[in-house]
Amino acid sequence: MPNAKRTYVVGEHFEQFIAGQLSGGRYNNASEVVRAGLRMLEDSEIRLNSLKQAIELGDENVANGEVHEYDNAISLLNDVIQGSE
Image (cartoon, rainbow, N blue to C red):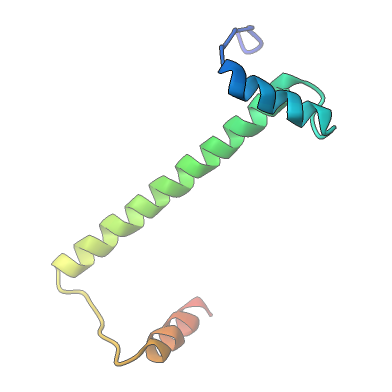
């Protein structure tokens, strides 16, 4: 049932927001506004999960003693730049 219709209550604040988006002309109907918001939420969740995984990996590296000390920020920056090439 991919096209099943459902009803959701978003409250007055978001009803006004949706109306504003529609009057701006970027979206043709409320469903487009809601889908755009859901896409943004999905993207945000994906980025947040990636960040959490990177932090977890960094924590594991520190716990295993896999660290590198820098004398100054320029040395760190140079290392980051070289690693991205």
